[in-house]
Length: 257
Image (cartoon, rainbow, N blue to C red; front, side, top):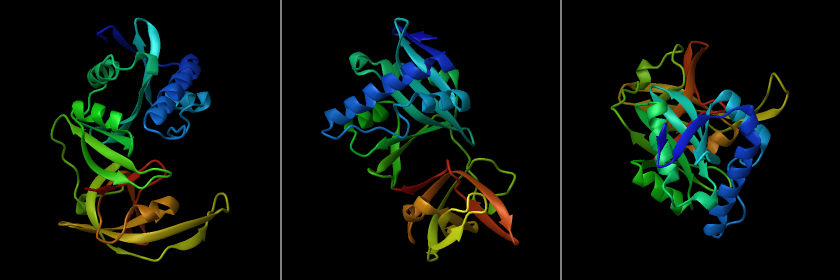
């Protein structure tokens, strides 16, 4: 598929090194433009991390006139949602509309009813790219060292479950609610690694009912009583007869606007 001399090709393990280099140049150029120290998301300049994405996620090389100038990484997040995990273009090839053309092409190659994407709070340039491509900011995530703004683009209407409808059979749960209670965090010992972990339980409620929301480590500071939140990539289990909604390692707790 081509558009404006753009071609998307599914990445292979041989592309990991080039994608890591292009990613490093792209993210660090953005940092410099915004007066920040060199910064990028986890693993942005490591070939081994890009190899992981190639093996586990939907990863494409962006080719411009048959040269790799960028990459797109996509995650399937359930309920006809997909997450634009990464999209980056080498600084020498920016301001040509390549990223926008590549995103339009990937929406045809990998259709979804809705898309989500995170953007570090200070990246105004990327904010403009997202808004020009139909994304709207819906909330934020307390990440370190910077906040992450969370955006969503709806292509078609999506029906999400209410809290009372959640079941252990559901995969990659997406649900909205308000945190109405939150217990004091406590330390527990991991059964697998014997590491000390921090955990707490909160009550997440919507008009249909409520559920126990289990929050671990960094997740604990993401939501407080009174916050309206969106859970992505969650899963439900029954523990001692009680329904528990877990966010998991790859899940997200977004504080809604």
